[in-house]
Length: 138
Image 1 (cartoon, rainbow, N blue to C red):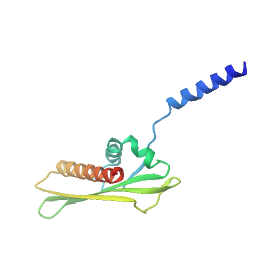
Image 2: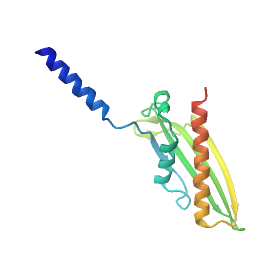
Image 3: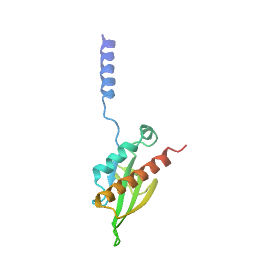
Image 4: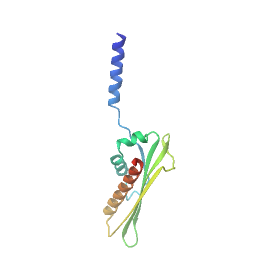
């Protein structure tokens, strides 16, 4: 009888683990709001971080920060700098001691504001891919 109860308890606990939410890294976006919003940045992080990362770099110990800065100069050229960083966590906060950093630069003359935002998104994606590649390198 006790073995049956133990088996049922074990089956229920393993079933609840199967439905547990997937791990998620803490991501912070410190971008210029005219070039990038936080939800877009979080989406880029989520789409580019592979499952293997969670084994090598646990989400309870690491997080990511993105920064997209820039805008238009006097000649109406869109200039963008995008930076992606992996930082250690301390509880619910990230410590500014980057373990990996990647920066991507871009410019586009005669761009509209929408094209400038698209350039910022593309450059942030490039920086995130670079950080991911550096972390996953053998």
